[in-house]
Image (cartoon, rainbow, N blue to C red):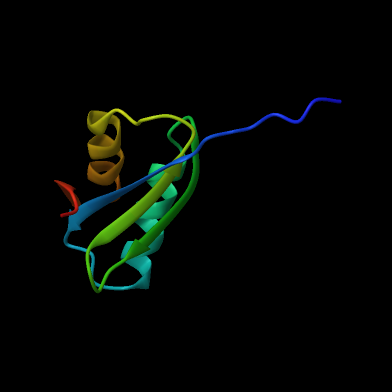
Length: 78
């Protein structure tokens, strides 16, 4: 058996409009459906959404997922 090394990328996005745990769950759920995403952590207090993925994500795919949840992707967090 060969050990395979996987490299994961962590990207932090700024999302506008999240105010509560329900918002965090909705955004996390939609982004989690993008292929290659292994985890999503949304924090309404900061508007930051941390996404761990196997490869760089298409920002338009992330934007579409955030839109589907009913929020607005501002872009990468500073």
